[in-house]
Length: 322
Image (cartoon, rainbow, N blue to C red; front, side):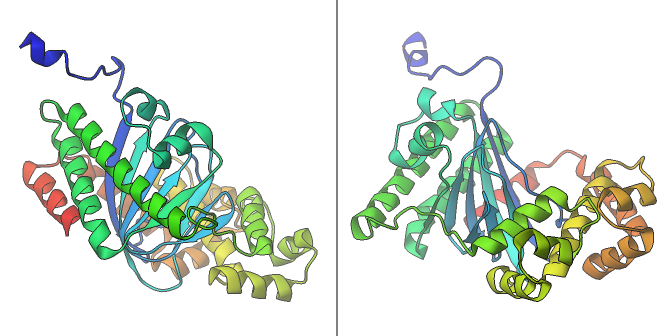
């Protein structure tokens, strides 16, 4: 037994620096507008996302990346990012992996794909698109990761490290193949229209204040018509709706997480000038009132607090492989 144990990798006593979750949602789902829309960072973790299917855009450090089936993102911890759905209904299914930058240094092989992202070029966002055949083993790895993380059977740490190493190898091979054929554009940023990116940054910073389209246009030195047309062309979104949706997203976060706050306070803190405007825009995007949403959200949170059964775990694993 002792001879076998010496081959086990040393793990930190405090916590295994890894997290994994599967997400499946519709872009018009009343309960997902906030986490997919609010800009955020993961200061102490690198995030890997694999898109099983879906559409929309990721805005990462003010650059736009289009979601597509079998796309893999490596997002460094210092990158501000958020998801923006297209103005039509889509089902999105993706896997999220989070790990500490030292994770690869301590446990995993130093492939160019992940190791560069964690240690040498923290400012770079990397992404790869796999064809259907290439994606099959990656989907299998993600299903296995989900199973190990959910069940936490004996030696699940070792199994996770093995699966992550395989994922890193497949990704590095894909990146190397692209570099060989397209050395200038292998792993690059899809920087979009600079004006639209600056508008997004401006709204992220000031949406809680009393700003309108004229304020946004003035900040860019453009007319309302010009900036609205530019923004629509680049993102597919009406600028006025984008600003309103950002404010609704902020309100939903407060409704879900601060049940002690009054509706008027939520409206004002989210950038709406009055409750009437808040209520009207909320119903436009979600089809229900803020009060109804809060009741539904609290009810769902109560149900989700129940422990997941082994049957549910097996079902999630099967869905990840499909």
